[in-house]
Image (cartoon, rainbow, N blue to C red; front, top):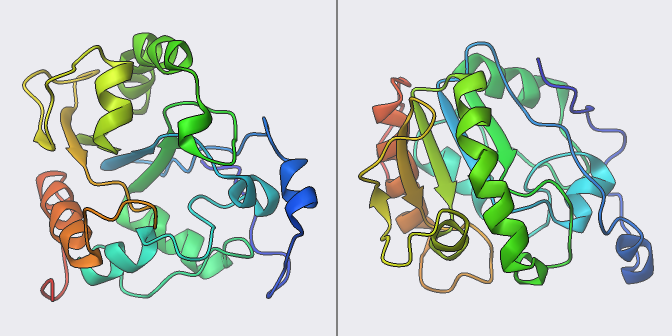
Length: 204
């Protein structure tokens, strides 16, 4: 069961200085029972920690991609925290969300490579304890460093992790200009189907 808190208020805003105060903070994993698909971000953003909701920054394409892929049936807005109904829907769909590195930073590029490698060494045990069918890492660069796989490419990985089929899919951050929302949706739809999640609609 997740300890992520529901939305407190809509339209919440923070100054840059206020957000900086959340550097190093953490957010609970979102882990339904059962977790069919475990989506792994690199580390939390400052706004995500501030509102205690994964992928909260406005402009992040994570939830639009899930919706466009037919993984969820509504467009979730987590910018001020989770709505109770949206949180319940993610649980019902078996969508788990965690981060490779727990501590928040302004950008994922702020992480030290040794920190990623340390997280990678213990991650198989985390996956095994959660027990998803599929684990999908959102971002190839961090995956290559964390798992000492410099030649890894986006897609299915040759070695399973913690008993789960392992994939790398594009990072939904707005800073990733190599992938459109449509690209994200197609990749996320594929891993969701592999995880046994019943999908709705078609990727546009």
